[in-house]
Image 1: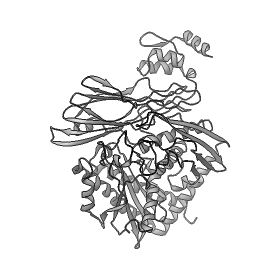
Image 2: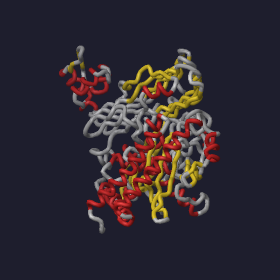
Image 3: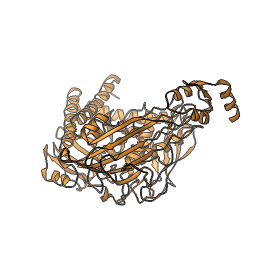
Image 4: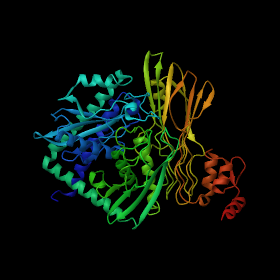
Length: 581
């Protein structure tokens, strides 16, 4: 390598900064709370020849790290064989087709070629979650869809911007097929502006260091990322590590779906074999190939966060056995739950498989659901329609060093729930409470974190509610003797009468009138290690803070408490724990 280490590090940080500024621009300029507040978006730089990841914003969703790479690779191939129009400087392609390196239809990807010296040096790309792309229900999360057409408008790669100018005809087609179309122009221009900022910042970086130096640095960073990942893989003992994770149901057939995984170390590489997983399902809980690959990548990023963010980090990871399963969806299988739900269960399977091999690095299972709740209707006070999309956090799994985080963002990203105040300002709703889901943390020597418990009321107009969530039947898995986290619960009150979805946390088109309410209680994380080895004082503190009841302290942890505020009864606790032993 001719580059000195300092220059290499500075260029690496510069590429990262380009992506971070794209992320910041996208969020600050977007109109929709799901992007502007929840940050459900990502920006990155990708290689001109194969679409390989060069850099991604630190604040972008990790699940997009693999899908945007795959999407860019497919776009490059489609341009090469004439299936997509050739680019010109200033062009921006739009695509949301799940089967072309995507996730679900609501994740809309933009790609802009970056030119140097008259040729494409790399691609700048981003993904943003649009609140609606049409389909059977507001928000696109159709819990009972049986074909992708029911989920919304599917776009192949087309040039939405031609030489910097928005193609009004293509945009008119998009607007004619989605709800609250007049509000989308803000998100579209924000998404395009982020890529323009990326072009300016990357150009400045290359002007400073020279095209050849930056290209050499990119190649070296990719090589080193592969070396880093292989070095960490070498710390895994030889062996085959099996695991299973379960989806509650597909929303149509009320039966669980199994993700069956065997992880095998092969020298300095890892093989993830999903053979034996459930076949393609009727409902929307299928995962497309790009999302399945990305879920494995992000799980390994959780386990080995020190590895640099580059395509090289994925080279030692080999995914097999997904053909013919619901983890490799083909047209026209519905896929609205793939990125937000199935991907997280894939990551859970990876964690459960590797925790015995890497107990100091791997956690118990996290909440594993994005809590997708879409509410669409009419607001008479403002004289317009609305589509509200609510995501929510959950508990993280306990680990060797400490308890799991409570109300953390989903496994697949850094997206957070939009502030209650913003949601009440933007939509005709009122939140009655927003608190921790008490008792949901899985018992363990290090307990799981607690989920979220919120209740929201429709104040005026009429609306339809739809849910695509999971972990309502099976709680997030505890490991090494730890207990499972609490399950997801959804309750809808219509005229004061409670209703529970038949598929637990999946249903669509639930009519709401003013005064009707929706309550969501998200899962807690799994516990890590024997709960009866937990420090009794830590249990007492949880009870004092009303995270658990005294009865749960006794039954789950073998800790006897007396009085108010609670105190540990040392003798009774010793007796309880001795009896279990």
